[in-house]
Structures are given as C-alpha cells and as structure tokens.
Length: 354
View 1: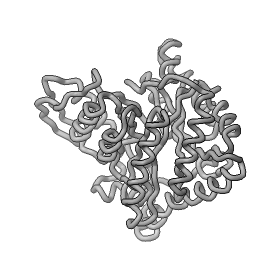
View 2: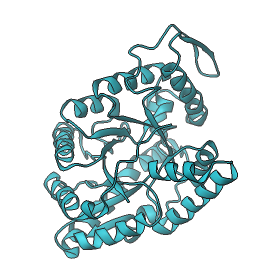
View 3: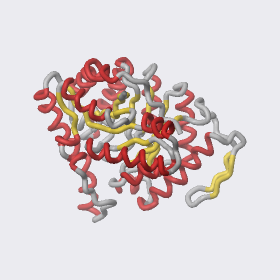
View 4: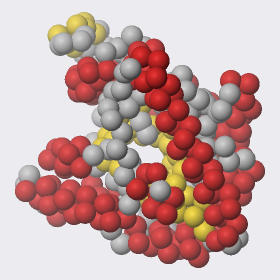
C-alpha cells in the first residue's frame, strides 16, 4: 500500500514575493506535520524563482525546528553545486537536530538550467562526474571515525574526522534521483531504491518492470527487490477539490503557468547567450495536464492513486501547490487529500536507506 508525501516546491514570480511565499511554505510544512503527511520533500533551484527558499539545507533546519514528526527529504540536493564535506557536515547536523528525521536525496543537479552552474562558477559538463565523486566522499565521511584522505579529479582532502557524527547509523538515510530509465537501471544494478520524476502511468509501469528485471539479473533476490520498490517514490502533481470541475478550474491554469515559468529563464539565457545545456524534449507526462496532473474530487484522485498503488511502488511524492496557486487553495487541497484519499491507502512509511 502507498505512503504519501508533499513536495514543497513553491514558485515566487518576483523578488518582492519571496518573503511571503517562504512564510507560507513554513505554514504548509506545519500543516503537513499536523495532518500526518509522511515526508516533506524539498527542492533546490537557484536564480529563477522556481523554488522560493532556494537553499533546501537552510530551509530544512527551519522546517525541522517547527515540526514534530514529519520527515524532511531532499528531492534533491544538487550535489554538483556543493562542496561534499560541507554538505556531509550539514546533513549530519540536520540528522542530529531531527533525531533521524532526514532523508538525504542526492542528485547531480539540473540537466537543463545552465545558469545555475554559471552562477556557481561550475562547468555544467562536469556535473555528473562531480556528483559521482562527491557522493563517495560523503558516504566515506559519515562512516570513517578515524578520518580519511581523498585524492580525486575535483577534490583533494585530508579529513581528520567528521563532526558531528551522524545520529542515524551508519549514516543518514540516503536515496538517489533517477530522471531517466538509464538512471533507474543504474541504481537497480546497485540494488538501491530511487526517486522517479513526473511520468505517465504507462511509463511508470514499464520503468518499474525494467527496474525489477535488472535487479534480478544483477543477482538480487525477491525480498531485496520488493524492499527497494517499497522504499522508492514516484512524483505526481496533485490537485484535490470538492468536485472535478473545481479542481480543474484552478489546477490546470496553475499547472500550465508553472510549466511556462520553469522554462522562462532557460529561454532568456538562450536568447542572450546562445547557450542551451540540453535540448528539452518534454514528454506529455510533464507538460500536458491530461497526463501530468492528477486533478479532481477525492474519488477521482483516489482512483488515480489506486492505479499507482498497483505498480508496487512504495510512495507518491505529491506536488500540491503548483505555480501561482494561492496558498489557501493548496492547503485546502492537502487537507482534502489527507482526510479523504490517503486513509484508503494506509501503509507504513518506506524508509529510504542505503
């Protein structure tokens, strides 16, 4: 059965709105804690207003301080933009502050927003290699009580010992993002769970089948495969209202405006610099609301969630506040979901661990 979480990914259309939307986001986090949402996932994007709080590490500390039970996950920390030792320290500190309520979601960083790498003075083509090296450093830092040395392509380190050491042993819970099928199968061969981006149900079914098959071919037994599926999450945009018509009246324009805003800075940079990091050929699952949006009454949304449940995945990451959607509407949507949809899928939280 499914577990449910909220992807707190608030858009701010102008700098004058940042403070208000950050406050509204903290209020949404407290509401999710009160309503029994399992995990609050945080994003990381810079310079474009697509994620108002920008820095999920700092924001996670604020969320953990004002909540009691909800877990806080990163979906994801853009590892290629961080020094791995600083990020390892920060995650270990959050793990201690929260007494184990942190899920460290790791990814290389955006595949489209070249301006994020430019703003941090990092060559975008190095993102994947930086991520691979940084992940290894972080895991070693958390599990080397005597310290360690590292000589790599990007970092040369002589680390006496990580302090504070993680609260969770042997290290904070870790999960990786996989935005492509190749990425998911790479994690399958390692025997690891994953976070899947927004996809159609058909793509989700096919990708999970390939994930299962690849794990089996890699020698993992049925119990391990089932456990990894239980720990994996798929992402969906979700809008719930009393009727299908009301949900669509608000949800579809908000979704379409969100998609346009997320592309605006890429188009601006291309017009000014002639630089495009990766040509975005977005499938219907991401840009067409008929495929990319679960939108309707509690009955309608529950039926769509039942289809996801049938895939065998452990949890759904729900993005409730889409684009310029008003905070009050998003809060009402979350309330309806937790009162009338989630109870039909009672389940234990899939623990995202290595």
